[in-house]
Length: 78
Image (cartoon, rainbow, N blue to C red):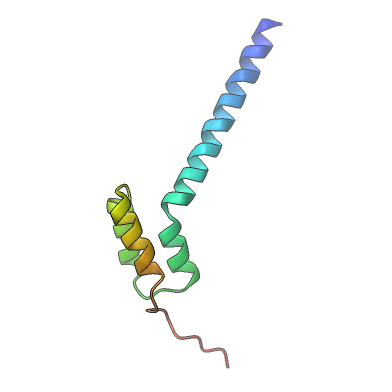
């Protein structure tokens, strides 16, 4: 009966770690997600900047501000 508790604890620990990793990566790549949704012209550069400089707060903030500027593709909604 004690082994069942070990398996449940292990499963819950793995589930917690996977959830934490997913949420952390989603937060880390917010500038890329914003640039993708807005169809930014420099999405590749924003992705590279976020990947390599996003671990610093200023690099992440610069990528986020860059993804929020008005350099987006024109909408041909006609």
